[in-house]
Amino acid sequence: MSSRSQTEGIAELVVAWQASHGRNHLPWQQTRDPYRVWLSEIMLQQTQVATVLDYYERFLSRFPNVSALAHASQDEVMGLWSGLGYYTRARNLHRCAQQVVTHHEGEFPRTAEMLATLPGIGRSTAGAIAAFCFSERVPILDANVRRVLTRVLGFEEDVALAKSERLLWSAAQALLPENDLETSMPRYTQGLMDLGASVCTPRAPECVRCPLMARCAAFERGDPERYPVRTRRLIRRSESWHLLVLRDPDHRVWLQRRPASGIWAGMYCVPVFADAASADAFLANVGEAPAIVCSDLQPFLHVLTHRDLHLHPHLATGCFPEQLAVDGAWFGPDEWPSMGLPTPVRKLLGSTQAQLW
Image (cartoon, rainbow, N blue to C red; front, side, top):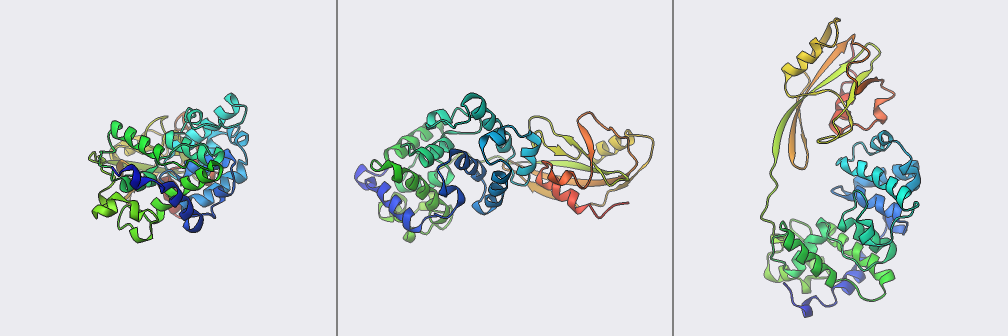
């Protein structure tokens, strides 16, 4: 890695750059309220800022404080989150709010160590909240910051390994500001995030715009895209799912809860089957009245982090029993749009609105 002399003063360079060139207009930057900062940090995990902005404002409008969020139903929380993806975040968000109210008298802990004990708050998120809200001298290592630091330091270790991750955390700690922490810690933390998002990008980094170019080991070696070093690659899997959209004469759709674990856990969804024959068998057993089945809906692909879902939708309209399963119910066109639905299911229901019998 880079020598101590080469990395000295990095914090000051980042702080100065962030003040002049970083992002300073985002709504969660204008507060040190840990509730608002925590909400933004959870939403921003693996999600672009432009996408988060509208969701952030809607959440604050409905849940202006942690107590309001804690006392909401999970269905309401999932409904507001619907479309933002990575739904485990929403479930943990709700659980975390409940624990803050129940175990911390409605006040977020003021240290990264204590924040990391709450549901859905890992070490990096805890560090961000503590740095932004309480100016604690703690590092973060989200994807953007990890990329910046491994390049600046010329960090050759495989970041997929736990021992390498520990080394990088130690190196990140050593680079932190040492003076005027009240101002420098929030700005330094934001500055690293901004550099990773806008300058030190995964492909074709704009090194000439970077305030750390003269200190960057990767730039000196001429291979910044090599970092971070990661030998363990993501293994993707493909699955085929058959989605059965059931509509009754009142234009209601049948939705049921997904299992408590796995893809779309706990969310409302149309019935899912492994193949078309299983969907047909389900229809054959829901009642004596015949259903009209339209099997000409177009299959489509939905990409998740570790999996490709090949979705095959089928539309069935007819007279069905009022209760098809204990974990579901019929919902009208004025009800299901506000529910916590997976994004492809929401789009599917919207696209089939006009296909009524």
